[in-house]
Length: 315
Ligand SMILES: Cc1ncc(C[n+]2csc(CCOP(=O)(O)OP(=O)(O)O)c2C)c(N)n1
Ligand SMILES: [Mg+2]
Image 1 (cartoon, rainbow, N blue to C red):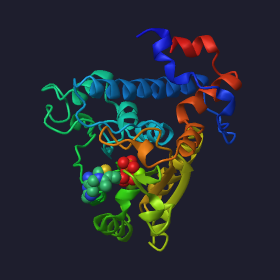
Image 2: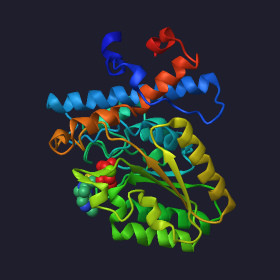
Image 3: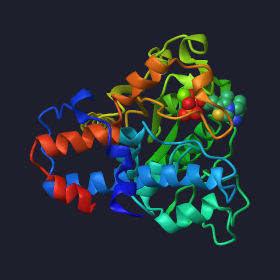
Image 4: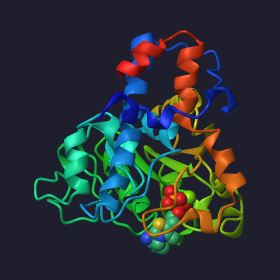
């Protein structure tokens, strides 16, 4: 890809983007660079996947991670390869890239190749897994893997381990009955599991206000004892990092599970099967773009002098 093509997504005037607050969190320049590299790479892969769909070459199912990268980057990096257990969902491309899937492995999954490390090409594409490092295969039944994550967390506790089970899903998945059963059980048994909820305010075309009792769906669990609830801006890597540290600190006490509720924006349609322009106004989509996590982070790096335009272009 040419430099112009690879940076096509960065063209929007950065002046209108919402500024990124770093909350005074100091992160080494090399780490910031690594974070940006991963986010940029995930965005390129997301765009590439959409292209494969258009060309009818592969990616039979594609749910874009664009708009979720803050939450997903930090979730992926918090997972310790071959130690913890990660239960991602179909929108978690960025999570899985940061957690240890390579670009080639992601593409082999998208193209349903026999060499796909998750399922040998038999699973629906965009359902990433790498059992060799404990990124688990999950089904498309939304929220169902809360049960699997809690089951693993139960085993971790039984065998006195210090591993952590990470669950990830969207907001509407949380409406499922088994999610409540799982979180209730984890709370009662004080299990080492972090539930990451990426709230993009939609379940396909259904807005969250028509779906859940609370738009901040984690608030549905306020009465559950032993559960730590942390709310973060899922489009701000710094806030996600802060929130995840808080959740992990709590898990370490052994007092119970944590929920990290990340407010995200969905920059694309739900998947390749719908057109969000049919149920979202132009104004709403335009407003969401101002929170673009990748562009906001890039803008931050430039304005803070952490990276120069030249260094960014090199990436
Ligand atoms: C149990 C179940 N019901 C319905 C579906 C169909 N479905 C697939 S994705 C989806 C929306 C999920 O929305 P959310 O949990 O908010 O995640 P998002 O895609 O917005 O990230 C639905 C209803 C499903 N896969 N499983
Ligand atoms: Mg959603």
